Amino acid sequence: MPGVLLRGGCGPLVLLWALLLPLVSLSHLHQHGRRGPCVTDRPKLLLLSFDGFRWDYIDRVPTPNFNSLMEKGVMVKQVESAYITKTFPNHYSLVTGLYAESHGIVANEMYDPVLNRSFSMETDSIYESQWWEEAVPLWLTVQKAGGRSGAAMWPGSDVKIHGMYPNEFLQYNASVSFETRVKRIVEWFSAPKEEAVDFAVLYWEEPDESGHMLGPQSPLMDVVIAGIDEKLGFLMNELKKAGLYERVNLIVTSDHGMTQLSADKIIELDVYVSRDLYTWVDKSPVVGILPKEGRLDEVYSLLVDANPNMVVYKKEEIPAHFHYQHNVRIMPIILEAKEGWTIMQNRTGPFMLGNHGYDNTLHSMQPLFVAHGPAFRQNYVKTSMSAVDLYPLMCHILSVRPLPNNGSLFNVKDLLAEEPVRSMPSPPPSTPPMVKEYSYAPVWGSFLGVVLVLGFLGVYIRQMTLKQMYPLKHKGWEMSQPLLQEDLQL
Image (cartoon, rainbow, N blue to C red; front, top):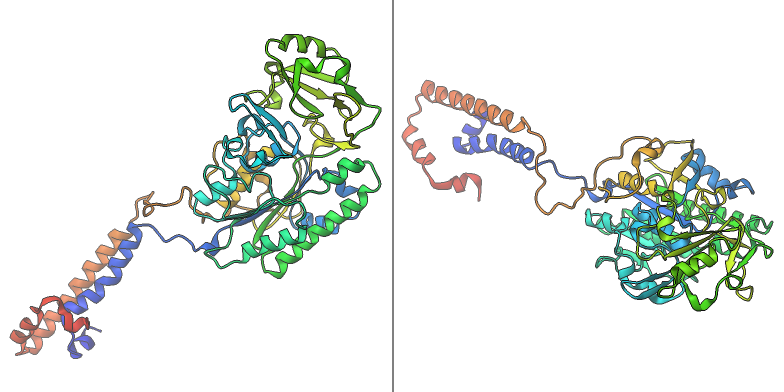
């Protein structure tokens, strides 16, 4: 090769540069770390919540689509939701890994004495950022790690939290069909690589609404459950048509279960305490009571032994295993109805045949969990897990660093097939990534470069000496030209 280059009239410094350039590039690559994978290599995850889907619903009617997921994925028979087992607290626990006392969404109806403001899932107060900013939901963590997220109707996902929304989201509108929500999610995952989402959350109101109206024991719930299975099948087919089914990790779960109520099991507070002594903050079965100034002990004494089917706690006496004490939005007195009982001020209010919110250790309050995708084992059944363990599991799959949380990856790591590919950096790189371990590549590169250069010079000098090339003086003049611009064709 050196002889060929020389005969072509190329100067020796050009050849030297050509030999060293690959080595310089190699050394530079190792000194600055390898390039990260492209966006398409990032793990993908879709979290779907069917509100109020009790863990044992799938045993009531044929559910071929749920069965398909379980056969090629994993199932957890029972998930212990966070206390209280209501919609807003638990949906925020799922995406933060925090108990309600830590993330601040302690109920569907709240009062904050510091803000002197009230929150209700029935009003636009849900869009006020201040209620949500005691925690950081996973969609924001993904975005801060350099990924993209999307959300379709998930509680809190259409709120500006810590100055950010999900990259893609739908403003909550209960009239938007499940099929429309799914198609939008699939579009987000299927977008060009720089625009595609890596993590998405999808929410559907059923079977919760039917469970409240009919009660979980109603035979009419069988039709509702079968309809949920059909909706799951629609999602699976849309993912398959888009070529996403084997690439996207899919987790299907819920926020809580549901239990049957009876009009014969009603506790009327008006029988025991005057409304002039307190403010009713949250609804049954866990009721927040805010006594009027200076009346706490009086209200407590009137209620503590009022009814054997109602447990009454002062805030500081709430059992530690509920993790429901250390937040100003938890009221000074908490009333908890026993399973199947309803607390009302009197019987003139609306009554439901099914409800949730009870003790989170009750089987009726626990939702299902099934998952499928490249991150999960196949045909694997786990007995139980805690809802807060889902957050570190999702962070692990997405390869993002979890924020401090109440869950444990160790508790659910057996659901995983293997370690996911670490391809989404966390935190996002603002500077070139640093080398964590010393690499010998630059040393070997330099050594090989020296060997090649010495070898080339040896061959070149030997050829010049043997052939006694008279143009040596001219050659030396050629080598002295600045920058070799002509040889490099610059």
